[in-house]
View 1 (spheres, rainbow, N blue to C red):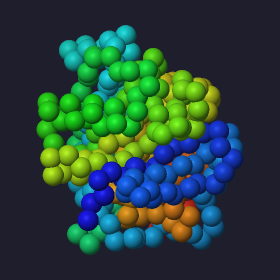
View 2 (cartoon, rainbow, N blue to C red):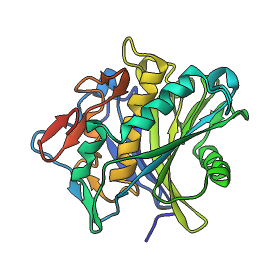
View 3 (cartoon, rainbow, N blue to C red):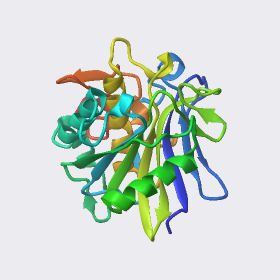
View 4 (spheres, rainbow, N blue to C red):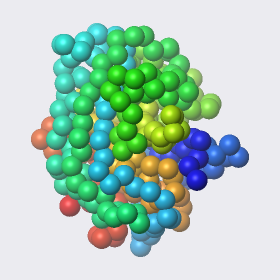
Length: 280
């Protein structure tokens, strides 16, 4: 049975506690963990592979990058900004890279994740609120679905401008009053479909930036993490380890994020290699 709402892979900063995997009474699934300053590499426990827990993966995934906010950040639908173009360019090539292919080792009862990622982008120049709650992100996804279509194999990824911050409960991203995360992914039920989505707030603070990287590269780093987890553990009941960590969680911030052809990535946990790898 599908949960009404499942949120996993909350990419956290400013916490010294280990990762916490929570399933609330209303079915909401949340994953919290620290970032580079206090928690880098906390999930890389030796000989602790991720295990299959009988839930679905996305076999042939798609992604829609939703750039929400002013033209000064994202440009327009006919003239996207350099930032929007860079992120869209990242998605256009991501599915053909070793950094995506590494997750084809993960599977469900219907088969393995397959290589290739069909992508489009959408620019919405309406003004998001300063505090973009989880419900607000879901509302934006639903509005965009009205234009691009509803597909249960698609991850709808909402990118926010620097004038907004994301919040999940009392935790916030850069710009908010209680900095604890950089990004997260989840799912909710809409029109009978299980909708996968991510919240991608602007990486405007040190806890969510890698030294020397551009805003686009920091966004791409988080998009790598959230997209792969949305494919390998979309409902929070497929692939994670005994600590509750998903495959990207185990390699967050350590080893160091890296660039390939100018695009930002993070390492991925590989059961086949028993550790964090750049790709396969």
